Length: 305
Image (cartoon, rainbow, N blue to C red; front, side, top):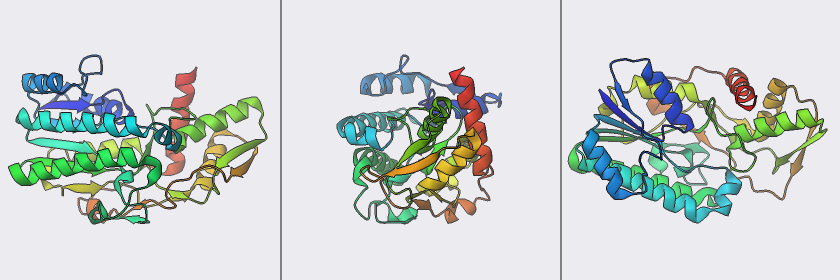
């Protein structure tokens, strides 16, 4: 089987490539940005028609934390919209019958504490990452339209926040956990006695270890047609921001104290996925948070040496 993976140098893409490489029955197409600029519509269509993949995993996107989304809403909307529209349309034009689009929990309305697939596009989005969310919703809609109009299997998998090897560790442009790992690691090295947490620390978030998401994608490789148009793939368990700091501090060995910065934005108060649909496929996440944090910190230590 010929499998094309967009975003093959990002966290999801790199982990997926590593896993699929062990399956010698598949030929992988993993163009980097240097090989193929997905914002270029003509180049994308030419590449897809030339290689004619059997299935596409669309993992490419511009991602970042709250501050990055607030600072660059235009770029987050335009870049992600152009990439996804080009990739999905090029796949259709190239005759690709199976397509897995990577969605995001930010696609959900801001006032829903339990995230159910049927609630998408039924309310206002969270303002702190609205541009990114609009682009992700548009991609999921286009996949659904294609599935319904052409009878093809274009599906959207929606994970919660992800963490693990090949994540991006940056204090401004990273998601919560990689930013916390870097912040606490630096605080330990510098002997800082206090680390500040944005907001009151009581917002709740769900995190899925990257190996669990990859496991689901590989398991469903030959069953994409069975999936609904959109499906949550999560843990079904969440923790407060304070608890993530405390658990990460324990892994790193940081023994200082925490203070809250109430001037900073916190985003949605709660984002917990309803995982009843994915359970019907006999799948569940296997890596507990403490183990995932240890694995991620060990990876972090390797890349900074």
